Length: 284
Image (cartoon, rainbow, N blue to C red):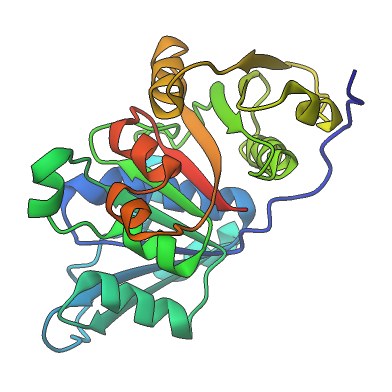
């Protein structure tokens, strides 16, 4: 039996960066970035990569105040200084680069982040090579915790109200993937979002003896279920995510070790391409 504990540590994601292409598809990612900045009382930087010259005119940047007004956190027509009264800081920047991936990596090199929040399109097979992918290589190269928000999902933040809808989380863990880190991060995120009712499915991969040392946070309204994975790992994670209709998948990641790994992507990236919920990837 493992020893339960009460989650006390806070999630240390104070500097959040959200790369945006100004499209409607990226709006869900922006909503999640704003919600997390509010929950963690952090700094949110919205950045855009311009292929030519960095333009000082930020009028085309997505506006945060209308979102906060819609959520009832600011009165209509509020001044930009009112945002600071909510305990968060909003910054906007434009980086000049021909390639979006290179532009984001250059920006992160000068402005390190605790968390990336990235909207992502999901492609398979030939379509994946025909479309320029940005989210996966950026997260891989920076080794920064990244919340991937697929463009076609609602996620765990209600767009109209800003309320957290996080109720079910899937956490695949393995002996080499820092299982306690994944558990702790899940608990800290749920605490920050004020989740009173939470069900976490902990999917064990590997020797069951390894998981006897895992400590699960104890909190009223939280349930932890342990399930052992059999068969193909990626299919198992995606199938379990669909069966339980999870709102979030939390996984620790590892770097690729060969060209074949790079072409296929690691397990986290393969899951991301088929996930029907946001995925939080944490460097192990």
